[in-house]
Image (cartoon, rainbow, N blue to C red; front, top):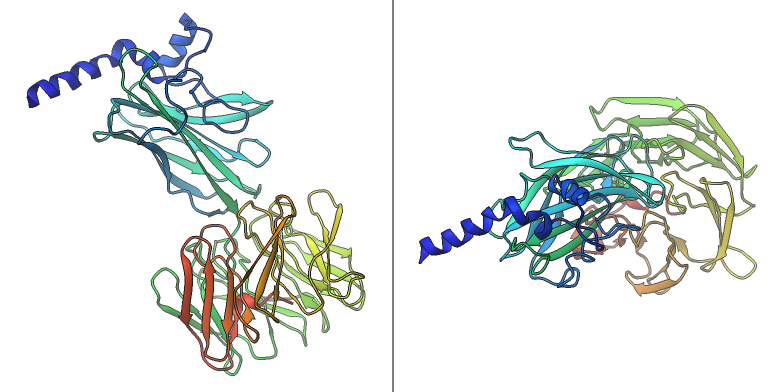
Length: 484
């Protein structure tokens, strides 16, 4: 019986040599021409990943709807955030319990449908995957896909392929991987085959307040008395601590060196000096930028993956930005009483100059100067007593206008996608709002620090609510550093 089963499987696999073209690969719905057979014999034709403007093979393998089988396609290894030039190894797996041969196709594009980064495949013997190109909507896209030698299962019921995605040299906003997989029964027809699709999105830049570089915001505090920085490593629960600065300094922790880790840093109002402790080796450097009375507003304004020193001068309503890529920007923007609320609101991977006007004509107003085109967007959202907590809560690569209301502990989020809003309670009066990406999924999480007992409450978007004691009386939560 076992021999008969093995013989049946062997005979089915032999069909690969003559019928896999029809059984596995996407062919024209108008018929199979000699040219099509030849092209498909070395792998699927481009533009079948189910990405915007593309097909997904169900036009040919039409017996079952997309994603209707018991298997699927997975993309493993794609992080929630990427940094420029980062090489990210991926594993693509197509599965179906009764499948005989398997295929895949993968592409990486930005929010505008343009190729993003570079896909490469390892050299193997025989060659399992290849890279091809295709044009969609006038844009040249790159595809990693199986070859004729890369269709037999890795193990019964599934096949996996290795692909490396190298991120763009410059930040381009969110990047989405689109993949389609075919689990074929190899019976010589297009019937009985299951087509699956999957996508995964990653935003560019470092996670805020991530001192160890694992893509998650760390619970962290500044202890004013001794000038100590304490953080709880999200990766293993260990503590990190360093003495740097004094109680009169302004905390400005961002990733200034572009290594994916937040650098311990402070700005000294009395001298206008910036002091940055490199996360790579804990050496420090210092430089003057700004003067007493300024408000430090560091962020990546030039999109090179490194935080830029910057200040907002309320006395003249002027922004001064020292770009890490070179040069200084001086921009007038704002009115008396405005508070800076810098973030990337337009999704171009560059921080936008923005202000929160608590005393607007009909409530609190938000004014945003888009870095993409210099246009200004304004909207009313919030009240005088609210605390701005802007950030990307929806994971679309654009910061959402948001505030926390101390009076009732409610969070109000204005979605960047359509300017609809949602609200929910989290925290109580007396808490300190400390939003961050505590689960590393690329979405900002509502969180508060309760000084009364040094307890953190984080409403993680994928990992559930975190309640953790960390700190002591008098500590200041670092994720609150840029909440005005």
